[in-house]
Image (cartoon, helix red, strand yellow):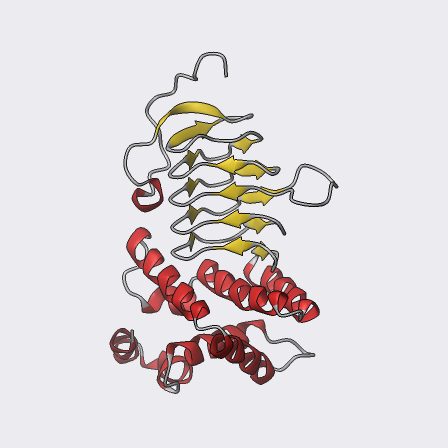
Length: 256
């Protein structure tokens, strides 16, 4: 990534100071990411240096955070045709930034620093237009494409290698407490604008069509679409990697 950033600075010298401060002025990936996120999430009441120190300490206390951050970066590079380098999503993609902010807030939540975790959630929502509760459990190799309007509730689970488009909601169905949010199993594709509501399971490798409202479990490797969502065919291949939001079999399964 440093090589990519050097080439960017050569092509656009006006960005050289930004790129040096964000990337070249740091010795590790964790330091650079903490600096970048803190510079975006700073406010009139919490200085960016304080946030940077909080984030970097979280990385030091739990090295698996950085492992997930790198896996997410590789996921964006592999799956998003708009990503022509590793540096671009690292520097500019707010879906990536929001997800890495969540990872720090989740660490804080688990370590009984809930007020600060919720503050980061609030700033994430304000700055990136992404709202992820710090108690949600999210695996690695995740891509939030664009990110705008994504909402992930408190008891939601997203396993590894899932791709989520913008305006997706993983929410509850009302004011009930307890375990009330969706469980997204590994390898799923959640298409643009999908609303998945309640403590339901989206099976491994499934695909949820754009704008679908899902209120019931989805079988593994099944495509669902519509309002309410119904099966429209089997998934062929790795939905999360192929990123194909279309489907050819428009015949709803009988009796569903």
